[in-house]
Image 1 (cartoon, one colour):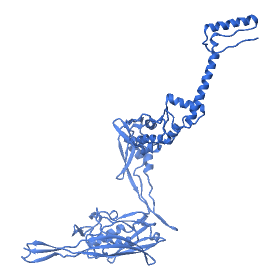
Image 2 (image 1 turned 60 degrees about the vertical axis):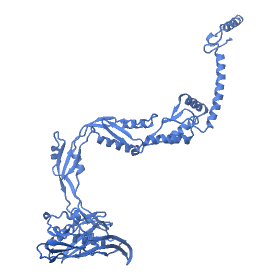
Image 3 (image 1 turned 30 degrees about the horizontal axis):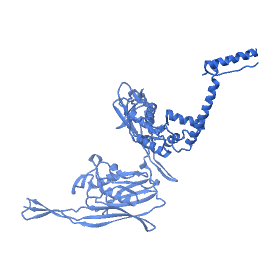
Length: 553
């Protein structure tokens, strides 16, 4: 059986063409009864259409292949490519990078303003380590029309020409830093949630109840921020902070107790190796936990729970001298016992300092240790210098304790933190080695700059104060020498005052004069008798005592 098969879509042949084909079919059928004609008018033109399409396809393939090959040899980004609203068409990689850098720097340098009701919060992107991946943007732009096969490349090139192509930018940031910013906003919002809190004041625990409110929707805020930064049309309008309602926690007394409770620790020491472990006070509720829970009732905003200090059985100052095997320094000064009040003040100040242990790095404050000089504290009235004049006040004489301690500290090669010389030269220590103190200011402070704890030992015996400092000698120990001397004299002046009680022409010395001085002091370190270093401790000026003479009028 013979047959002719025609397939395809609607033909573009004329009516005359169809008549000729039908006549041919009739002739074939007359000569061949088995012939089955199946031609259909609408399919006859497919052959012609297919031939034309094939020719057109070959032409397009040929031209686009040449187009793609030309593009591969071209060094610039193809037309129609952009990113972050910046047109990159026809740019080299370096030119594109410069433009993207300029755009991203502008975005990163702009403050982001978050808004919630009438409140505003600003964010510098440097606070969260914000950055754009510029290399990725430029590399993606340059790779369009280059990284696939010839058909894919051709499609990408034509697609960019017809529809444009925007390269997605990636903005990176430190999530922990952003979360910290969100927590700050949460804590500042007027209608934000307020969790229960507490503080310790005057040996009381003040507990504040929580308050329901709102929290920042952190994930949504992140998305809004990133969308803003990577958009093509960058705007600097404020971003409305998305929030979520939140319920405050209930006050948890047991949890608070666990956080504030602290056991007292006894001091102890070891000798092999030598080490001192200081004592510390503890803290606890002065009522039971059940009693504290019973206080947290009702609608009050705050609740007060009394506290108590827990004291160690063995304080650091109780540790025996066996934990401090080496005498690092000692210094003595003499004082007259004829003034009983002055002697009392010296003994009282000394007793407050005696036995003090300083761990490495600890700073000693004379005023902080001795306290305010008041009659309630046991101090007596004795002579002091006030505004250049000799007068009386509580605690007079204790500067001899601070000055003697200063000399012992220098010889133990400890770091001086604060020291001030007297206005006038004193006689109980060499010039330039005194240390005046007064409640409020000035103070005498030093630091234990050694690697082992030190202990201060003060004795008052036979009109002498002796300060010794004990500890553990270091492998690289120095012999310390303190040198001070006068560098100049400041002559005193004579002033006169009228006295009607004296006979006319007569005079009387009210205050004898004495010259002032300038002085310098050094700390010299030696090893095996050889000077290793010389440290300037101070350059001091001591005022003269002006002579005052009364004249009769």
